[in-house]
Length: 56
Image 1 (tube, rainbow, N blue to C red):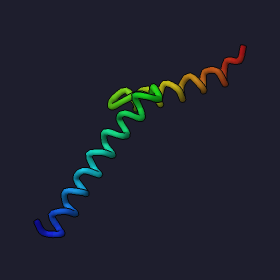
Image 2: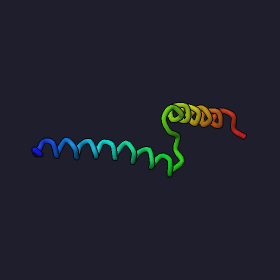
Image 3: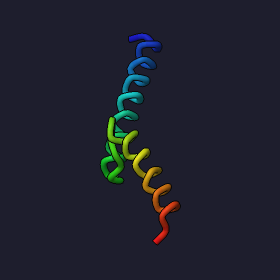
């Protein structure tokens, strides 16, 4: 096995580990995943503007 093959395997393992690590972190911290994340941020901004405009 050549040295570049070892580096390629390590790079692939690091990439896959990062992808799964981010997903696990978001699941543990109860943050939205995938498509829900863009809607979640937009709704939080809209709700914040609403509360700013219509104070109780």
